[in-house]
Every structure is written in structure tokens, then in C-alpha cells.
Amino acid sequence: CVLNIIQNVYNTFYCILVRATKMDLKCALEECSMALNLFLNNKFSEALELLRPWSKDSMYHALGYGSILVMQAVMTFEQQDIQMGIATMKEALQTCQKFRKRSTVVESLSSLVSKQTVDQLSEEEMHAELCYAECLLQKAALTFVQDENMINFIKGGLKIRTSYQIYKSAARFTRECHQVLQMTQGNENKNETFYQFEGGVQLGIGAFNLMLSLLPGRIVRLLEFIGFSGNRELGIQQLREGASGASLRAILCTFTLLVYYTYVTLILGTGELNLLEAETLLQPYLQKFPKGAIILFYDARIHILKGNFEKAQVSFQECIKAQQEWRQIHHICYWELMWSYIFQQKWLEAYRYADLLCKESKWSKAMYVYQKAAILCMLPEKDVKTTGEDIVALFRQVEGLKQRIAGKSIPTEKFAVRKSRRYGAAQPVKLILPALEMMYVWNGFLIVGKRTDLTESLLVTVEKEETNLKNETNHNEYYMDDVCLLQLLKGLCLKHLGRFLQAELCFNEVIQSEKQLKYDHFLVPYTMYELGLLYKDQDEREKAVRYIEAAKNNYKDYSLESRLHFRIHAALNSLKVTPAPTP
Image (cartoon, rainbow, N blue to C red; front, side, top):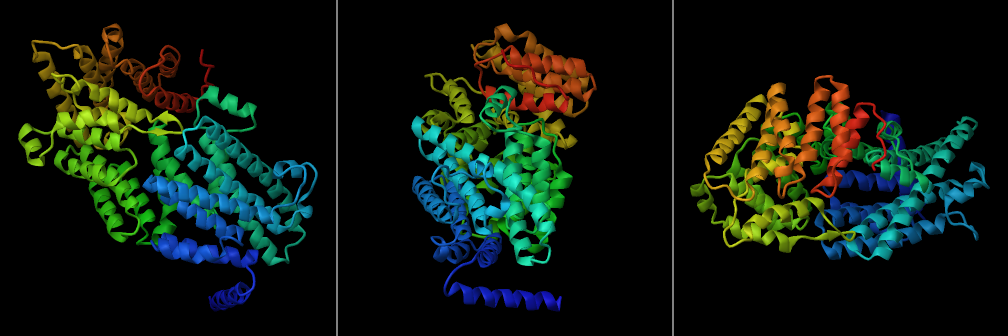
């Protein structure tokens, strides 16, 4: 322990002396580690101030400084912040370029590998390639968000490909380095900087493989043709190894896995969550940064996924109180709090957070306004009056708030706009349980299904609406669409209550009503997919595959089609089926 303290004091004084004239690789890594600790302790401005002075002369300072500004831009969605992030990343790329291997023929490491060995690249040059790849990837991502121009969209795609090729080459370098290091074990400084390099490779290779593995088969085949690969097992393995290390990127590997386990597998998959691993990954950081807002947020998110909504609500409030500098973290908490109260059918509390999002966040105004109106639809008329809101007016605002990212409309916003059109006529037609419909869109039934009491309560709500609809004498043009939506929602509740036969009857009623639907054509393929999952849960594999494949191959051009294809891809993978090509 005493030796560690002496070593830390020595390293600190060494870096202070070096900083007066230059910033070598060892000191850059140590100072960036200090900035990372400040960041995780909610001292965001202090982290930036520490990194800024050397951001033009040190590749790691440039990467760290730019990464914080990129994260801020993604969270605020302010055009000014996005432009600042792009400009800073452009400068960071120029800084990294100073340290890269000079080549008059090719710039990328992938070309260098075929001609040179590890010994021909210095440590600085190896790290420069890695930092360059990370900067390139982040700049490309921000370009997609900022600019709808197709030329820039293509350029962004090429930057991502270049970044990936560098990571692949760096991975080959890492394997060679392990052999070199076996002969140089006495050189501790070299070993330390190599392990930092290895952590970066594990982050890049792991994240690319994991995220690409989520894509539907036909897209993966196209990407493989131009040099990408998407191996989920390899991706998770690399990220786990990176998360268990002591490199700067260990926390980034951890966050990538946490995003995958707590969001991606739910929204784009079948909801087969690995919460035990998520908790294990987070635990050391909860101990080290007990007041860190980002750490507290993931702790609360895990409570949500376990169905412990009451504990999650307390944790989200702690996250909000932990810092006031980045209010965007508050907005993410508001979104989660809104859903936790929706799961409990505490509509006024849910409304409060939807209203805060409408007023404060710019991420998806159309979605927030639609969500607020949908929640108000669930309240009795007298409670709606206490809010002072006009439901019809809110729905009519939605279309004008729709935005585009990378030249494309956001699918959930398109869905919200289409549903809102029922209120555009002189005589608006009321939506049926729109908040529960959106719960399904975000796969919320998989979460609330962990709580029998809340699932039974939802079933009561659905059956009550079903009775009201049946008692109506004058059926409007949306009648069968509404009937089928209620049957889907009812089937989901019954499934999570273990009443499989009744759930199957509900799902089949939707499928048999296909030709009577006028607007909500998405209901049939989604219901077929749910019926397939129902058979999967009962170990009827052949039936499960048949219905899931039918949902994939027999329908197109419906709302939220891509989202369903992601879920189908995940479901077929879980059934160990090689997805057949889409006709």
C-alpha cells in the first residue's frame, strides 16, 4: 500500500515536470485518467479544463476533450453543440494525424500492416492509429445527425468503414504485440502503454461486432461484402475482457455492455436480458463513484428492468439531485420515470414527467408531445381538466414537430404522426389506450410482465376498454383496427400471466382479421411475431419458427417495420435458426 502511494506521488511529480515542456504518452494517459475520474464524479467542466490545454498537442487529450463535447452534443441535440462537436473532432483528427506513421501512398493502418511489422511502428504511432479511429467514428456519427446531405451521408459511412479497418488491423497488431511482450517483460512502461492500446482495440472490435450482429441478415451480408463483420459472441467477449482490464477504455467497454444489456436487447431484441452481468459490471463503479450521475442512472435502470419500479424511482431522483451541470442527464431520468409510472398506471405522475420533457428536452419533441397526449387519454375527464391541457390540440401539434436524422424521419415519430391524424378531422376520433400501445412499441410489456400485480391491473384496463368498444352502436372506420389492437394488448397480458391458451386465442383473432384492417396494418406481422414467441416459450420450436418467419417474409411497408425485423433477427438467433434471405 505504501509502495503504491510512493509510486503515485512519483508519477504525479514526474508528469508535472514533463508538462512544462512536453506531454509524453505515459503522462497523457495518466492525465486523461484523472479527467475520466472527474467526469465520473460529475465534474464535467473540470474534466474539460484539464484536457483543453493539451488538446492540440496530445492525441489522448484531443480524443478525451472531443469525446466529452460529442457526448454533450448528442445529449442536448442543439445544433450549436453538434457543430462544436464536429469542429472539435476535426481538430482532434488533425492532432492524431501528427503522430501517425508517415506514408506517401496510404494513410490507413490496414495498408501498413501488409508491409510492416509491430517493431516498425513506435508505441506513439500505434496509439495514434487507435485514437484516430475513435475520433473518425465519433465525427462520422455526429455528421449523420447534423447533415441530411446524401454526399455527407456517404462520406460518413466511408469514415466508419475506415475506422473499422483500423480496428481490425490494430487487433492483428495486438496479437503480434503479445508475442513481442513475452520477450520484453522487464520493460514495465512499455507493457503498461501496450495494455492501454489493447483496451482500445477490445472496445473497438467488441462494439463493432456486437452492434453489427444486431442487424438483419440481408444488411449483414451487404456489410460483410464491404469488409465488416458482426459476431455477437466475439463482440461480447472482447468487451468483457476490456471491461475487466485497467485501461482508460475499461469504463467505455463497461458502458457499451450496459447499454446493450439494459436497452438494445429490449428495444431491438427479444428482451432476454443479462441483468446479473449488468449488476456485476456496475458494482465496482458504484463503490468508486457512489454519487456519479451516470453510474446512478444505470443502477436505477437495472431496478426498472427487474420490475422494482419503486426502488428505481428513488434511484432516479438521486441521479437528478447528484448534479445540475448537465441537465440532459435529468431528461433521460424523466423519460425513465415517466415509463415507470406508466407501468404502474399512475397517470398523473407519468404526465408530470412527459410535460417536463416537452418543456426542456429537444431530443424528440414530436414523441414527447404525443406521449403526453397519450397519457392524458388514459385519465378521467375531470383529471385532464386539472392539468389545463387540450388533448386534441396536443395531437394536432405532433406532425409539425417531426424531425429528420441523416435525411430520414425517425420511425417512432412517423408512427406518432400517423396515429395523431385521427385528431386532425373536424370530428376527432379518439385513440384506444394509446399509452399502452406505445408501451408495446418500446417492448414495455416485457418489463411490466415481471410484476403479476401490475400485469393483472393492465389486463383489467384492456378488458374494460374492450367492453366499452363492444357496447358502441355506431362503429367508425377505425373500429376493427381498435378491436385488433385491444386483442394484441390483451394477449400480451395473458401471456405474461401464464395463460397461454387464452393469449393464443387473442393473437389468432388479430391474424384472422387481417383483411378487415384499414390503417394499422402493422398489427398483423407484430402479432404473428408475438404468437411465434408464445410457441417458443412453450418449447414448440417448429411452430415458433414458422410464425416468426411468416412475420418476416409475408409483410412489408407497414409502420415500424425495421424495428420488427431487428426483433425477428434476434428471435431466430435465439432459436438457433439461420435466417433465410428476405425475398
